Amino acid sequence: MRDLSSDHVERFNGTAKVFYIVSGCISAISSIAVIDIILRTRSKLASPYHIIIAFMSFWDIVASLAMAATTLPMPSDVHESAPFDQVNFSALGNDTSCKIQAISATTGGQFVLYSNITLNIFYVCTITFGMTEKTVKRRMLPIALLIFSSLVIMSIVLTSASFAQPQMFPPMCSFFFADVPAPTVKFFVMNPLLSILVLVVSMIIIVVSVCCRKDLSRSTAAPPTNCFTETASDASGIESNNNANERECEDGTRNDENENELFAVHHKHEMKILRQSILLQALMYLGAFILTWWWVFAALILRALGRPVPYSFQILTAIFLPLQGFFNALIFISHKVQFLRKYRNELTSFAALKLVLLSPWVVPEVLFSGIELVVVH
Image (tube, rainbow, N blue to C red; front, side):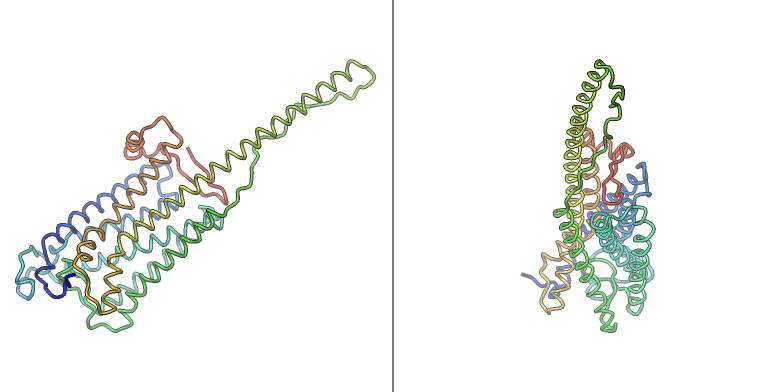
């Protein structure tokens, strides 16, 4: 197992740079596609889910492009200092462009992290506590935006005490914390760890809510109203007709009750499947976040323990760190494809995918209304 700190030239290799460029561009293009699909749906940004995903995608574009730029924003005279004088790469920027790259990557990454937390809180509020989408838009989203924006601004203020400088790995400009106060470093270490804790706890609440929820049967058919009884009892013919009509009404009532019961069972089953689908979607978003950021957190933990970071971790970071937008796009689009095929069984997966990408306004959408999930066709 090689420690990258032992050989600067080896760890600054073309392979890692290519990974950052390719992964960053793929992620940015995927996030642009997600925003394009959202803006062409019927609800557009009226849905809190669409607002959160569009916000996450925008900041993923910022972070992904910053990482894809790799060495280009570095000062053009960076080759004059060691160890950059031993490697050959393109550096066309200056101190300002270097700092812009560091701020873009840091701010974008933080907002993507906070968007994941907001998405989980959205699921908790709607699925667990029965909050309507209108209430979410009025209360939860503004509060979340205020809190998380304050944390990002705080991080920018704290990093102003440090300075951005070219790094060998990752091959880009990032903030250097060697001479900053210990509380600042602790903030940047504890903040993502606490965020992960919030993600895990909220996901546990969602899983428990979906798995332990009991649906109440809902009847939508009204009792029959065409049943009546003649009050004239002095004629045997009328009495006979009344008895026959009463029997017909009783049979009709029993049939309606059976139909209502069948509908309630079917409705309960449909809602269960829908909630499970949303639970799977939430788990996939969490999985995409873990797959993207695990390597970074693992490297931070190893450094905090004074242990060397394996070379493989650095390469895996270069591959997966810029790819969260791509993973989010896969989840977002595949969920819409699955949902469209559920209500249009004749469509193949390719045909459904084509409709989602080219005609997203035809895809049914799920609205959270109180404790019910409403499908809008």
